[in-house]
Length: 459
Image 1 (cartoon, rainbow, N blue to C red):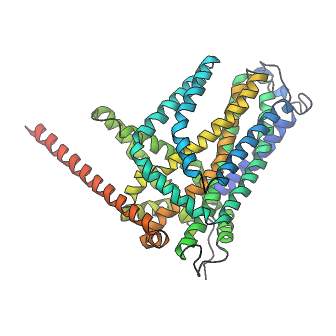
Image 2: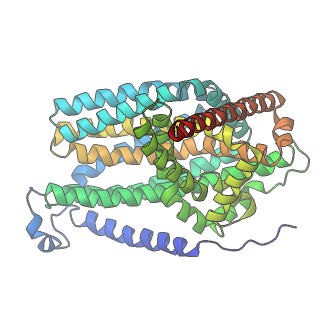
Image 3: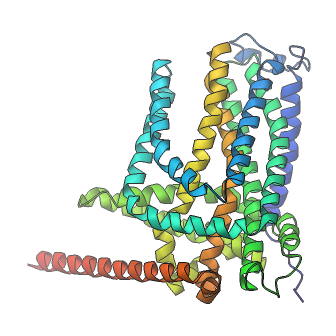
C-alpha cells in the first residue's frame, strides 16, 4: 500500500495563492474602472501626475485579447489533435521557420519606426539562427526521442484529456487577466506607466502559466512512469487509478513544489541552452572561452537545483523540489545518462514551437490593434504573444513530460525502456556510448593541452 505523502514547499504554495487572489482583485479593479464608463472607480485621482494620453474604455481592447485567447487555444488544440500524425513535421517547421519569422517581424518593426522592438526581434532571430546551427547535428536524435515521446502519450488518451481541461482553466484565467490588461491599455496613464503595469501583469501571467504547465507536467509524467514501470498500457499490473493519483498529488501535496520550481526552472533552462550553443562555436578564443566557461559552470550549478526532471521525481516519489532536482541530477551523473540528456535538445525544439505559436497569436492581435490604434499595437501584440505562448505551452508540455519520463526510466532501469521499445532502447544505448566516448576524448585533449602549457611555463 502506498504511503501517505507529506506536503512540501508550503511557503511557495501560500505565496502563489496570495499572489493569485491579490492579482485577481487588482485585475478586476483595473478592468472595471474603464468598463462602459471612464474612471468608474475614481482611480484617476491617484495617477493624475502620469496622465499623458487620452483614456479609452476596457471594451475597446478586450475583444482583441479575446481573439488572442481564441487563436492561442486553437493552435494548442490543433497541436494536440495532430500529435499522433503530424507532430514531427510541425516540430521541424517550428525549428526552421522561427528564425525567418523573427527576422520578418523585425523588418516590419523597423518599417513601423519601432526601433526597440526591431532590434529586439533582430537579436532574437540571430540567437535562434546561431543556436540551430550549433545543434544541427543533434536534431536527428532529438526528433527520434520526440517521436517516441509522442507515441508514448498517444497511447494514453486520458493524459490528452487532462491537457485539454487545463487549457480551458488557463483560458478562464486569461479572460480575467486580459480584462485587467485591457483596462491598463485603456487607462489615462502615460505610456511609461502603462508599460510598467503590463510588465508586472506579464510576469504574473508567466508564473501562473508556468505553474499550470508544470502541474500538467507532473500529472502526465507521473502517469507515464507508473504505466511504464508496470509493463506498458496493456500490462496486467497497471494501477487503474494512475491518472487520478497523479492528479491528486499534483494539486495537493506537491503543488507547493510546483509553484516553487516554476519561478526559476524555465529561465535557467533557456540560459543553459544558449550558453551551450555559444560555447560550442567559440573556437580557440581563450579569453572569451574563459568568460563563457565561468557562466557555463555557474548555470550548471544552478541546474542541479532547478531542472525539469525534478517534476518526475515529484510525481513519482512526492519529494520537495530541490531534493527532487538534486536526486535526478545525481542519478543522471552516476549512470552517465547526463551525457545523452545534454546532447538531446528536445526541450529547446518544443520551446521553439511554443514561441512560434505565441508569435502567431501576437502578430494577429498586433495587426488588428495597429489598424485601429497604431500607438498601442505593440502593447497589445506583446501581451497577446505571452497569452499565446502559455496556451500553446500547455500542449507542448505533454510531449516534454513524456521525454523527461523516458530519461528518468532509462536512468533508473534501462530494461523498462527495452521492454517498451527494443529498437529505441538500442539506439539510446548506442548514442549514450558515443557521447561518453566523445567526452572521454575531449577530457584527454584538455588534459594534454594543460600539461603542455604547464611545461612551456616551466621552461
